Image 1 (cartoon, rainbow, N blue to C red):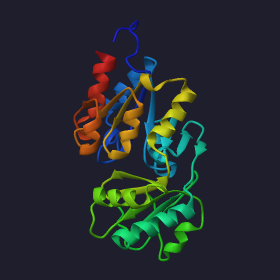
Image 2 (image 1 turned 45 degrees about the horizontal axis):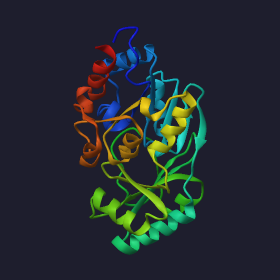
Image 3 (image 1 turned 90 degrees about the vertical axis):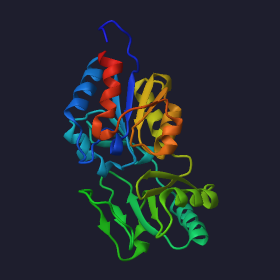
Image 4 (image 1 turned 180 degrees about the horizontal axis):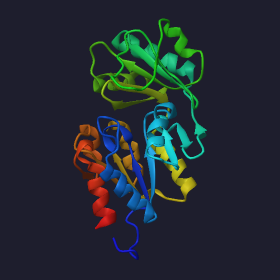
Length: 271
């Protein structure tokens, strides 16, 4: 891209897991370099992740990321440079409890976890809930009632037999008027404040940056990225993406392990 050429997109929105991050939770040097080149040319890069701030902050710090990040499925807008929350939306715990009762009446007992609100909010894990291997901190609980004693960003649900898509479908059918339901990764079905999506937080952050939807390119891999793609001018799905996201993407790239974000950005900003 010549110095005088207009930017193809003024805002680059990237999911983290399965998109910007490789399996080992690192960002390749190739991807770092092309993001640096795009931002040097005048574009803004914003992370948009389902992870709440406590599970995101260490990655942003390792990237020396100083801008805004949208965390918690759009519920948190976080200023990484100042280490502070600008906005935070919490889940109505009474509605969540009612939603869970309706879901369990339909499919049987669920395994539960929850993300507490705030910069230091813990992820609480109840009996039976399967936690993915990795370094992310969490607190194991013996009493599921402890999940509900402080404000929450979201509740995670698992079922002993149903897969993620089937569980999410059942949850939407019986409780979709009470809470939002999204699939954020393998084994990760979430209950959220009704109407909250990644697009909610991204639109707030973009407004702060003075950028519009039509000036935004977005990258993702899971169904929770669908609203972000719908909001953005151009949505790019990774090769490893869920079929539901691929179906609505404007473009497919190679996988996160093969620097799929960098492949597209090199074409847009370096050619």
